[in-house]
Length: 210
Image (cartoon, rainbow, N blue to C red; front, side, top):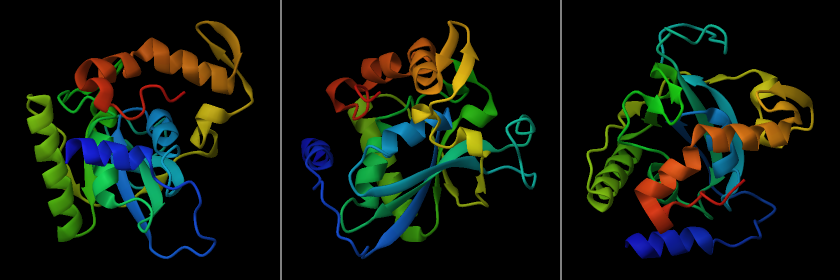
């Protein structure tokens, strides 16, 4: 089953039907939402990934006010379930993060960078719990990622959307860079791919994704 799911993600058909047949959404938190958005927009069958905030206690959170609000940096994945299944997305999600870390992800620390899966139905919960259990067996370590009931999803500011492919110039520790290059600089410096590769090896679906 493990190899079959990995293979099925790699071999998903490139062509999508002009008329969507079964459009669904999934919400996950995996640390920096720029990175999660970048990862899942590379999956065939995924139509759009939106960065945002969810799971907290305050209305209309912003990037500046998220600290202490209980909100996670999260993404809403819109996908065609006739091309990629919720099960496949959950399989990929757990192998794209460090689900053993309860204090954040990689260099990003604090509650807003924790991992979580937000489910909308008993069926989604069952699938997510099964994916979590399978990932724990495969990894051989305790997974702390919670499976939570869906909460209001607040779309993040426009400048966060598709950050990984932006063309604006931004200031970084490495000097002024094109936004897409700054994203790569950040991702590498944060150690995301290195840690995911250390944990998951060849099962990590996005390690070589820019």
